[in-house]
Image (cartoon, rainbow, N blue to C red):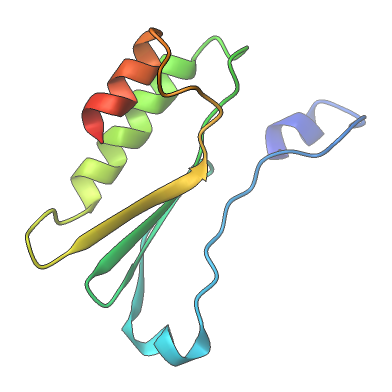
Length: 109
């Protein structure tokens, strides 16, 4: 959204932005792992929560962005038996599509 606003007056519906709300009672066991424009990961106890905002189908760099987000999750999340991982958000894709970015995301998951 910052880049869009820097190019001039914005018309239409705003877009973008991600976040995770955590109950105050869990605050002491919550750690911010990744904070990006399209990805946020927090660890609450032994549960990683990743919130993603993937580009829509008209984005020319969609495949690179999906691949980058998967790489960031993989490099920052400790995938061991004691930890759980929840990935949610605005995926903006059909998981059954034959597009390479959909296949990449499905193979990652």
